[in-house]
Amino acid sequence: MANFRKRGELQWQARVRRKGYPDQVKTFNSRVEAEEWARAIEHQIDRGAFVSRAEAEATSLYEALERYEREVTAHKNGVEAEKSVLRIWKGTDLALRSMPVIRSVDIAKLRDEWLKTLKPATVLRRLQVLSHVFNIARKEWGMESLSNPLELVRKPQPNNARIRRIATVERAGVVANGEALPEPGNDAAERDSTRETPDDELERVITATGSSILPAIVRLAVETAMRRGEIVSLRWEHIDLNDRVAHLPKTKNGESRDVPLSSKAVAVLKVLMSKDENQDKHNIEEDDSRVFKIRSDAVTRAFERAVERARRLYEDECKETGARPSPKYLTDLRFHDLRHEATSRLAAIFPMHELTKITGHKDPRMLMRYYHPRAKDLAKRLG
Image (cartoon, rainbow, N blue to C red; front, side):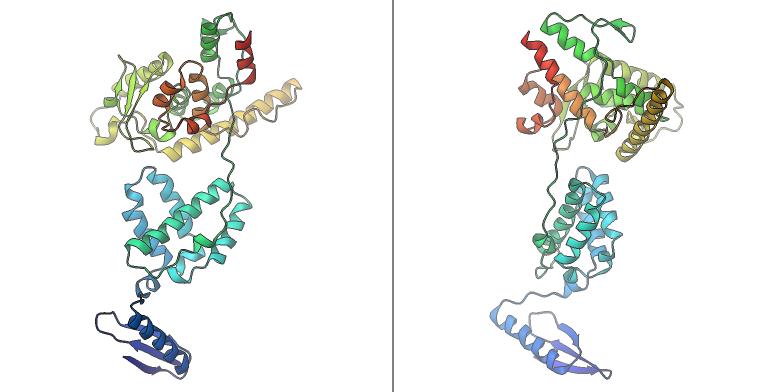
């Protein structure tokens, strides 16, 4: 049964009561509109097609994002990365609106603004997170009437293919770190030469950084092909320097993995272990067993600052010598490129089925996105 009540001079409130259903209340500018709405609700109830919009209309996008962070994001891998995306959505004007009034045109407008300054992959990631928020609200939070506006929004097509390799000095027989590099002449020697090649760009980045722990993180990344999050989650109790293995209890794909450690990686960890043992033991926290007491996003920021500073120093050197700086040297270099570099180097040593165990890729097709051999290295094998 529907009741109508005049509110002030210009508004009418309609209330529909039906046993077994929550009261439905809505205010209109005229009684005619209120009566039409009430008849529509009653008709839906009679046909068994009624779905309450009260929960959705009473929930703002900001509140939904907060709930999603508590109930969904907290149980995911990569929590910090998704929290960062949620913070961005909370800072938009859309966050102040109730869920049902957010339209696809609103999302599309924001998408176009972001694409002016951000990469398509970044924008796509933001849209995917918000789409999941709407789907969870509809499926699990009692908002069955809620439609997902992201379903009608055209998604940007990201170009995920990166072939960035680390620029290195490749001269056989030169001295690197006090040891002569093997002369080419057979496959084994060439593979060793590739592994022992000085990391020219990386050495410049390491020299330029003001961080005390970034150099060790960079060296481990390029020696092990571990992800950024896997490196910062390393714990001493999971590292066996005698067997040269680092155990990762939980990785990005939700599984555990054992990572073999090269002699260089072992050397880096031994130095860190000696420093850790010399630290004051009076204030030991439970989380102090981590090898690197730093967050993933802080690693990225430190690496970006180091690359920028290394590029400036390189340009200054070129200016002093009258040389023209290379436009590709120390530019467009990301921390994740170290995983590409390490995978490409390891591929020269291990067959594909063993390499997948090292890098943690389930699908060899995904692994191929990280394997970027240099054409001149392949040409050497032709003889």
